[in-house]
Image 1 (cartoon, helix red, strand yellow):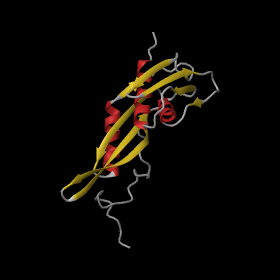
Image 2 (cartoon, helix red, strand yellow):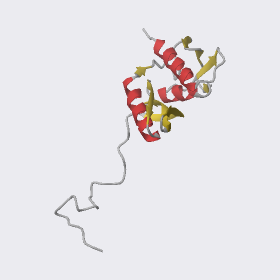
Image 3 (tube, helix red, strand yellow):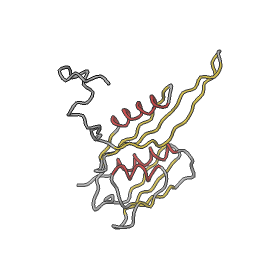
Image 4 (tube, helix red, strand yellow):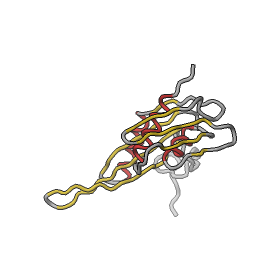
Length: 167
């Protein structure tokens, strides 16, 4: 085995400042949905991917990003950048939201209610993910319209959380 050159830091792979630990990111992220999209062209089908990513810091800031890319990793990275641009701040009082709020996005109508401490996240699917990353510990939700679109549910949740204000 060859000996490392301690004079040249580029050649010394065992540097003392490297501990194999990445710096902690500012936001936690969660892939909400991934879809393959195909287009018909003259040469055949062309595939792209659509990623929906939710980011949050657990202290009241949460964002949602939707983006497309030629491969999965590209779509996810673009969606993360988009989510950072669309951050909102959610007021959190005693680990819940201050009051009941309702919002509509596309065909989805959602109702978010504050809950007493210890009740937990009484929400399912995209609503649970968005609220968890925002740092809300106790909340209940109700979808007031039948839908299957995760993107529309997440957008309605973000719209409802964006309506909250504290004076």
